[in-house]
Image (cartoon, rainbow, N blue to C red; front, side):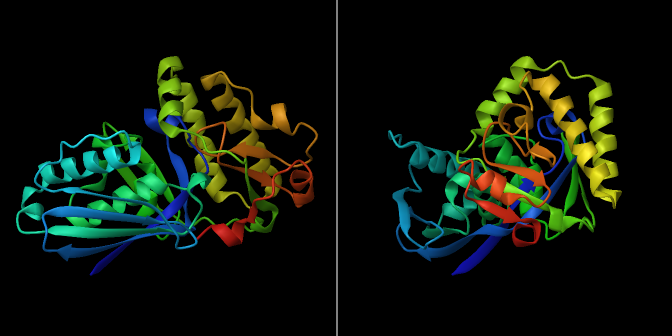
Length: 296
């Protein structure tokens, strides 16, 4: 049996614009996903997925000789599609035998920390194929999630002319005790968000330049007030690009600290500054995690 592991991620800056070449700051989380793989004699894939409580929530199997089996189950079909692509990239993997795969999530599926990207990165590690190529042919996206899945440090990620540029950095704000993350009680569909952005966008170099400047400054700042001003400016830029009001304006206008959406707007986690976590709990947001408890 072999085992593989990938970190989850939080995208601090550059959501949406990373698709158009902006810098983005992404941080790996303490929660990730592991994958164990064991060869079996039959020419088939046996798949089992376990949740954070080690409870089996999905299982399936299919032949490695015929990967054109379509079902009405989206997860099954998505898996088959991933393995078809792996087989195209590395056909020798499936010539002698099949495999049993067991995957274990360390965070709830609806948290949006990268259940798909950590899975793709683990499968790519096992198969010995390029994870960015595998992601592009399966779920799509910027590749930032996969880059973070492989990293034990925060990264600056940028995609230039289709090629990922990844720079590990030091990012541990001196004021991190005043940063926390709140789950919005719903998961956002990243594919739909990307599609919406693609249909709207009239990206301007000026916007990319502003996001780049914000990202570079956020990494260096030692002042909470400057950090808050930067993430508020970032919210306004993205708001104008995707034609949606900032989260603070529509949900938390009377909150004293700053608030920033993370990743696709509308769900998953958002970042808040300050120390008044009770403000959000009173509004029904029970999942609140401090910086040190979630960031690797």
